[in-house]
Figure 1 (cartoon, rainbow, N blue to C red):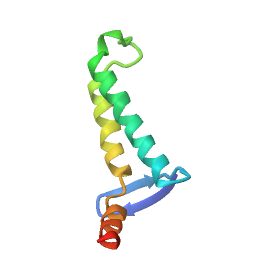
Figure 2 (tube, rainbow, N blue to C red; figure 1 turned 135 degrees about the horizontal axis):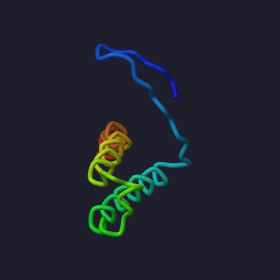
Figure 3 (cartoon, helix red, strand yellow; figure 1 turned 90 degrees about the vertical axis):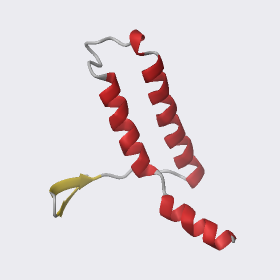
Figure 4 (cartoon, rainbow, N blue to C red; figure 1 turned 135 degrees about the vertical axis):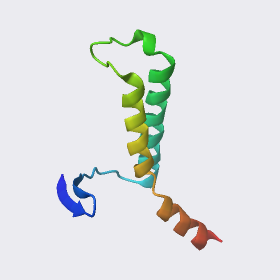
Length: 81
């Protein structure tokens, strides 16, 4: 984790390694699938382990959105066209 500062205050950035864009897309897809399962089958969850499943899923989805490389895909679209 790398500490950073902006107008809102201190925050941290983290990275993880992927071997390809395809691997990143699989990772993002799997995160979303896990969230869908958690929301659909939350009666199976132990309330003590995950007391706020909807909040937790919301946070995972919010972070997952940050993983999608929109700028790279815009560039790829420009190159392909």
